[in-house]
Image (cartoon, rainbow, N blue to C red; front, side, top):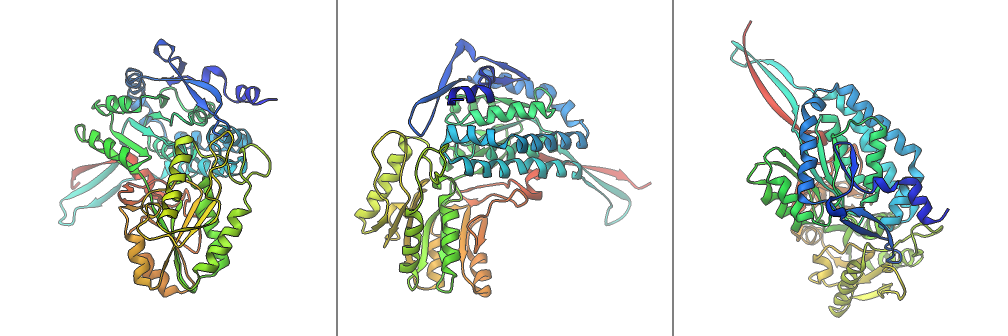
Length: 489
């Protein structure tokens, strides 16, 4: 079947609307927006364009079922997540294809996201029954102390376009497990995967109104309306630091709980004693996952001067061997970037770096033709102050800068407002511990290019945000604590 037929088979036209209180409905005045194929810029379909007023209606629906949902047995909440996990396993190929179609990543990589993203449902299915407080005697005697954990309440989630499934599941999973209801705004560039996920969750037994979906091109108006409502108790956002700052300010009046997973500028440190083959393997993962469109992507390659030339040569050879093309085609390693602005931004950073004195080993030129493509690129001799070392690239470009001492490497790595992910390659255990402790980042990958794991706490510090998603810590973001003082019997 052709693209349009397969799209219709996966996501019926009525499921490309707003989901409010379990009802799929058109936006007022039948407003819709286009979803584009980044491989050629064509229109794939249209989706209902929700308004701020409809966002409040979605919050109404969430508030209406909050008490009942919070009272639902933890095992029942967990079983809904477990069934949703199984459905995602069963339909992994279809979900991956749809994700590739609207976002651009190769289908094989999208399957990896389905495996990763669905695991948050399985993890929190198991955590739902492990929410507990404590009972203890007061230290001075004479009374007992009881603590009770309760769901925060209605939440507002904003998810980005680069991981259309996983950035939703790692918020939805713990919220469902904790007993919170939700209003979710998917990115306007990639709403289809989240809309499909909503149908899967309904099939898994999630009650009407627990999850409400409001696609919109008016993100600012929607967030202002929802955050101005004192019934909303929690905001979780994944996206740029600039937008995150706005949402944090808007949360102040209602003192809403917030968790922010924001921008990154990940350093990739290669010391002189590193296993270069392992370092290049790690670099390919840390840089080329999602075409470099990831907040955890290796943004700056800081390589010891003694091994920099060899590391750059090997990395350029590997990057140059990648096949660029439409994500749904066989044999493609690198899909398109999300839009023309992304291509322009990446290209300008490369141009500026070359102007600053960098040398291009491979790539570096925007190809002709349709679609939003940029080739895998390796730059060497990049000055430390070049913009490509200070701004988030969000594309398949690896800039290499050298260092001579450990202290110099650590200082360069920490010389950024961001603090999300970092990577260290060395065979020296003492150096590993010393560097890991000195790095000002929420996550440190040692001799690996992959730090994300549903069982681990994902998050950063400084301008990369606060709060954690995943792991035992993730569910804490959705729980409040009540202390009950009891007289001694």
